Structures are given as structure tokens and as C-alpha cells.
Length: 116
Length: 118
Image (cartoon, each protein chain N blue to C red):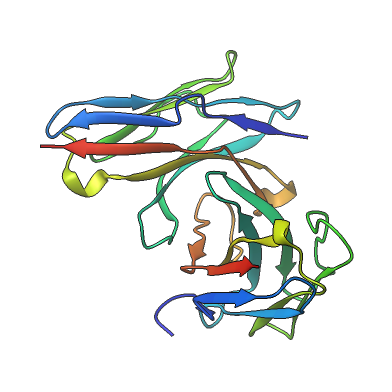
């Protein structure tokens, strides 16, 4: 596709329910990142997929959060038993994972998650 | 761990004027990269400018330039000839340099909301 695509654009759920957020990176991009942006805050790193290497999960806030990526394609971020504190915009970004001199992250428009 | 601080939650500038956004960071790393990203209401993050820490020369991109002071751990963004389209949130970000110069995760500040007025 022309850019990083995220779906849904907005998601409203009830506390305790599970949600799944989807990210379609730019075709051929080997690196994929998930970030969380709470209202009025900067972006918090969640997880990073780099080709076939083990993902960097150091930013996942709890075991309710998990993410998967098959090869260099779609990624899904799953939040189980959602809490009101999970309300945020979840942003996905992808890149070709070249050297940083040429590195450019392409961001999607995010999923606005609201937990009632 | 790295931290990035943006002490100006909101800034306003008149069209065609110049504005400077502040950013400081804290790290024990010597090799790293610094970035400014713009986030318009569409929520999509757009790279504005990038600085490599080992370079003393300040990066410039058209109307955007930085003042990088490595010893002071300061990285401010100057926007010249401000335009209405510059209205957005601006985030300062830090990336540690990995071996081979490959990318790692970005650490962001909390952002500065810039409003360009007529």
C-alpha cells in the first residue's frame, strides 16, 4: 500500500473485554514498531519487530499486552481484559531498517482506543 | 535509560515569524541520534529533521534548523518564516545508535503544541 495502514481507526470497548488492533506496514518494510500515546503525552514504546529476530518486548506494560507479526507482513496488538488506563492512541510505524542515516519511520494514523 | 524533556507545553507564533522549540535530554550514551517529529491533527507522525550526535554541524531542512549543544544535552528546533501549515504538535525524540548504525527504538518527549496565527 501507499502507507502504513491501521485498523480500526477508532475502537470503543467495555472494561474487561479483549481488543485486537491491526497494522499493515508498507510492503517490504522489515521493521515494525508499536507505540502508545496517552492524551497530552508523548509516545511510549511498546514493542519492536526486526525481520526474523526476536522482538524487543521491553516496552509492553503488562502481560495483558501481546503482539504478533508473521514475517514482514501484518502485525496485531492484543490487549486482554482492557482497563480504563489502556485508553490511548496506539500508533504503528514501519521502516526498511537501513542504517539510521537513511532511516525513516513511516507512521500510521493510529487507533484511538476508548475503554468505558 | 534515556529521558527527553520538552518544557514548553504550548507555543504561539505569528505567520512569517520565527519560533524556537526547546528540548533537553539525558543519556549516558555517546553515540545517538536526535529527531524532531511533527504530529498534525491527522495523528500521523512526520519526520521534520534528524541530527547525528557525532556531527558538530547543526542539521537544516529548508525552514527548519536545530541548535544542537551536546555538552548541555540540548536540541532545540527553530522554525523560520512560520506558515499556517506548521500548526501541530512537535515531538523531540532520541535514538541510541546500535552497532552497524542500525535503528533502535525512539524515546519521545511529551511534545509542544505550536499554533501559528495570522
